[in-house]
Image 1 (cartoon, rainbow, N blue to C red):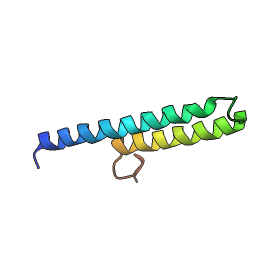
Image 2: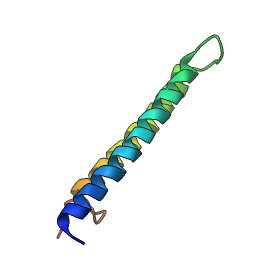
Image 3: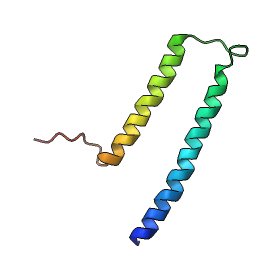
Image 4: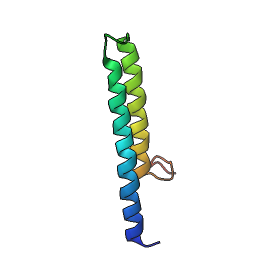
Length: 73
């Protein structure tokens, strides 16, 4: 497979998947309506800690694709 084909495939898939995630976050924000839902600050914190952790893990895979941190002996 040519490099250009891989680049184009990456761009297409990454754009689609990123838009899906952004849409899910927009849908999640609908839960902020206090007239329809009841939640605590702790609930909010748990949600965003989980999202931020997953985002950091996903980002790290672009820099360390083999799953290793950068430490080696």
